[in-house]
Length: 146
Image 1 (cartoon, helix red, strand yellow):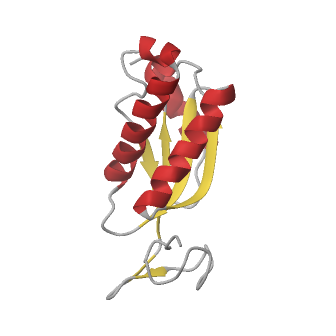
Image 2: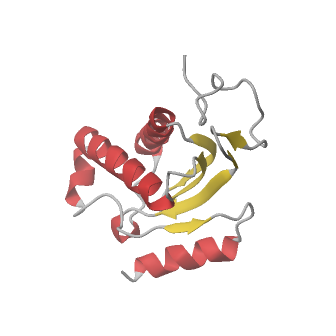
Image 3: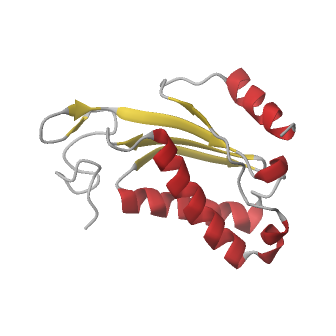
């Protein structure tokens, strides 16, 4: 049986997505909007690759106890809204997901090995519950220049 983020209730029981998590001494609702792009902003997240990437992201989040609130894959970027615990910094979440997905996708799809790495080293993170489309587009645009 899978556990929720706070490991107090089985996944899907005990509280709704909108309610805070509770640890032994704290109450928290930490959610990150994360956005990152493939290297050189190549449109690689299409078809089977996108489906596989979606499944891998959900798998690593489930393994780590992070709750995927929303996941959108576009040909040139990944947008993930994920709930984490206070001990899981945004950079840790992104690193775990990028490492996990890159190794498995490049292993399964040899064409992805032509890129020096699957993902750019950067990412965009905001903790706000609302994210502006202009901010997302600006980030993607700056990645094309790197």
